[in-house]
Image 1 (cartoon, each protein chain N blue to C red):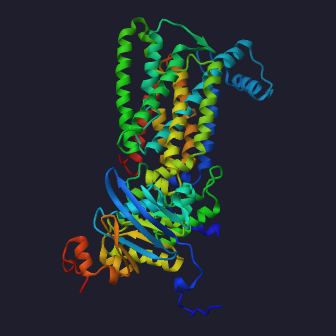
Image 2 (cartoon, chains in turn red, brown):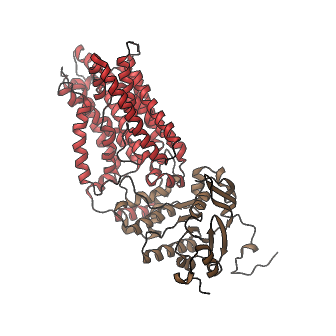
Length: 360
Length: 266
């Protein structure tokens, strides 16, 4: 019985270079996983003090998996790997994963290909929070988190909450209301940020560094605070892939396909915003990953959120490690610059090769 | 025992059957404007019914009340005897499939991916689609006759082809009731007739209860044994085409001379 269905589907497939991959998402996942592992080793090995690849693998195998590969290494190498590089690489992975998943979620939820994790004000909220933290003459550090991270996190969530509350009481259609309100609130917060930067004087460099994003201040403690939020949020979103699939045709059709649209919208918004807030709190504002990665994945495997979400997570995590690697090799330039320089042209090429344009 | 003449499945002779759709005293108002002003309607399983009436008569609103996406101000819609409001969205979607209006897709999607959306109400959140779901999708594609469209981007299709894809999606849902809101509006004459034949066939061969809003009264008269004429939120006529589409009634409701439209020959 099932074979008949497979035949009907297989016969109709047009000869298409992407068709092979599209029908084998597991192959794509395997490629992504290998890229991620290579990223892990490279990310740990490369830096101002190079650690030999075999030593890197041996240290990682010994400390993470408890395996003895029969390679010895100096103590300094272990300190560099375990205390500096590994938390940094894992933070980059967590942030890349989170931004890609949040981006895919916002794009599906808002039915807008231009949506990214920052579309509903998280970025401007976080930035304003961070800027205020720099302006305040108070220094608080809890679990290695300074006021800057705390206010960035709170600012991101407060911005989304404001946007959601304002949009809900507007008379516009829910999606239009969210997008327009997000834009308005974002603009207002951007004005606040500009004012804060104007007033910041010597703190300007610190604010600016936050706006461009980076992983140079990563640590195990910060990773331990952000990663659970990102990972749990991602799993909970992945379990709601049905909702995002239903929304492909619109909100009313989704309701007719058995999706409780009102409830799911709140849940997905909250989860994606939480992930984004956790990501921006540890790494600052890193653009393009959340916008580009879901599109790249969709162009290859199609719109099914059941595939798009996990594959975006994989690709986002790997891409962010490579971007951070490039940023380090080029002398600690902001990683946000790297993601934009890699992401934008890649995106343009993909759009040119896509068989249909994006309807907006 | 009561002897029933074979071949005459008159509803009243059988055990009381639960209505597929029941509307009871349904009123809907947007702000102060009453759009549906007290509608009672019973649709039996296996019926094929066209909702007709001028623009703004409340046809689409009524469909939304039946599907449970618009709660009425008063009154109730029931599916299989259960109030729609008491059923969760998935349960409604298992009892009732709605062919959505044509809309832009935000992302490129292949025909079979769109048809597969019809399986969402049956999907397990952990395991995803199962072989039975893939089979239902393949069968819906075959049933609607769009096998040659498989593999194509749904956004590259003509409007008529897209309409068929959306009908296939609703068929893949395998619900006993199918609702459509003006499925022929973007179609040329040939595709209109084909779409109507398809609905009649789904109704006659598969026993699917079909309720559709339709503007073309010729098509309604030709393809639907039961027509419900709505005007200003009320049902003004309900019955076979010859009865509902009478000249006097059409003149009263549409405010035109029906002979101009070649209808209602007195």
